[in-house]
Amino acid sequence: MMTLLDFMDNCTVSGIKQFVELADKLDRRSEGLVNMLEFGLSNGRIEAVNNKVKVLIRMGVTASLTSVT
Image 1: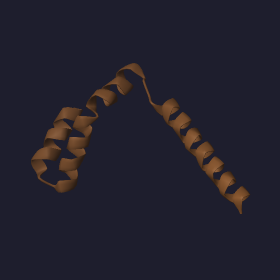
Image 2 (image 1 turned 180 degrees about the vertical axis):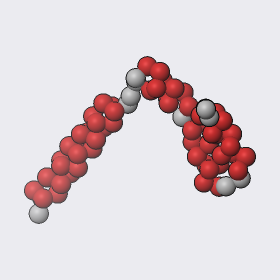
Image 3 (image 1 turned 180 degrees about the horizontal axis):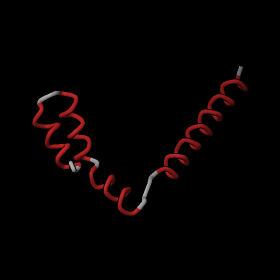
Image 4 (image 1 turned 45 degrees about the horizontal axis):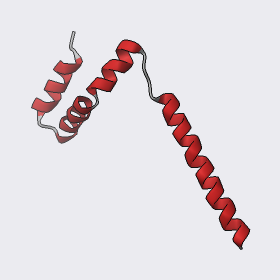
């Protein structure tokens, strides 16, 4: 059975630009990926809050622009 590290090595050795970039991304994010798989940790809630803040800001900017004209 191939491990993630084996897959990353194969991607790097392949020399194919997209696979090399994928291996680099996986390497940079490996700690987070391991934590997610091992402990069930996710940043989903944080991303949801960030999205709601962006929507509220957008709504506020839109409201302020429409009230001026």
